[in-house]
Length: 109
Image (tube, rainbow, N blue to C red; front, side):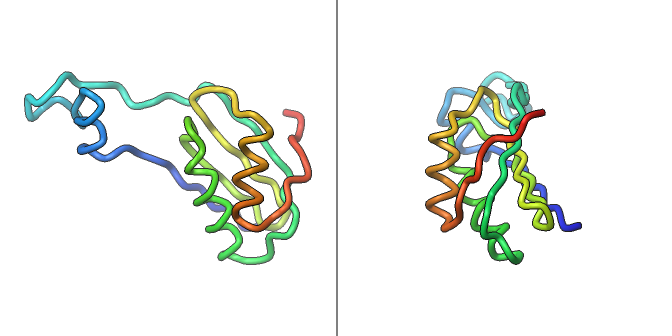
């Protein structure tokens, strides 16, 4: 079984641009807690066959607003997405399609 997990993190520059700082220790802003995962959704994706496929799907899903983590199980075609808010199937389908694969659907659980 092959599973890849990628965590999306903001850079210090992005945090400062949004009114905070990376940790607050440099005094440029107030410390902000890292984003917490509020939602987890599992999707079935068709057509992934290799590590390149995993990378493509992961990269496109990371572009969806609120996504904090993506885990792809290549053997089963299951993609687990953690996010700060619920994701729409349309947003996930668009990202999967952009990567060149087919979203079969959302899985229960």
